[in-house]
Length: 195
Image 1 (cartoon, helix red, strand yellow):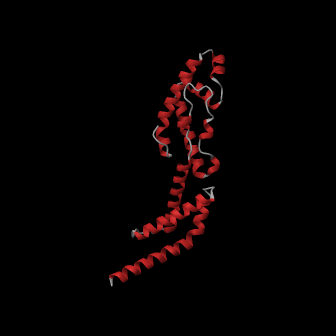
Image 2: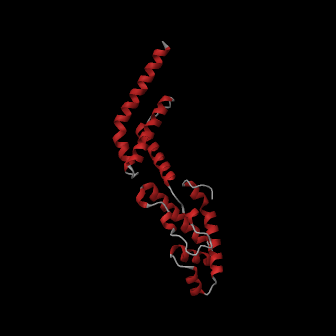
Image 3: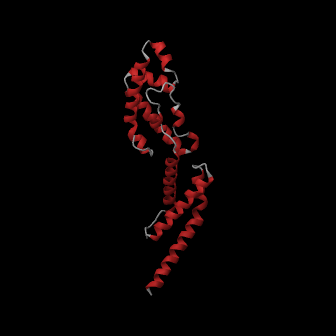
C-alpha cells in the first residue's frame, strides 16, 4: 500500500514538473537568451534551472511562485556563468610599478556588450575606482591617471614635470597599493580570488 502511495506521489511530481517545463520553457529561454550571448551556454543554463526545479520537487521543497522562482534561479546561474568566464580583472592586471609600458586595464573590465550583468559589474567597478582615486594624495592620483588612463609614459611625465622617473614609479606604486586594498571587497564580491 505504501509503495503504491509513493509511486503515486512520484507520478504527481513528474506530472507537475512536466507541466511547469512546458508552460515556462519558452519564456525562461527568452529571459536567458537576452542575457547570455552564446546559445549553448543559454541552453545549459535552461537545463540547470529545470534540474534544480526537479531537485526541489524531489526534496519536497514547496515552490509556490514557480515562475518567479525559475527566473531567480536563472539569474543566479547567469551570474555564475559571468563569474566563471571572467578572464581577468583590473586588480590582477595592473602592471607592476616598474612596468613603464603599462596595460590598457579598461579593456580588462567586463565588457558592456556581454550582457546586463557584465555592464552592471563594469559600472560598479568604475564607480568604486573613481571613489578610490579621489582618496589618493594628489601626486599619486595624477601619476596614476596620467599613466594608466591617459597612457602617458613615465619618461614623458618626468620630462614634463621635472620629477624623476623613480619618484613617479614610487607614487604609482603607492597608488596601486591603495587601490588594491580599497577595491578588494568589491572585487571579491564579483567573484575575484583573494588578492
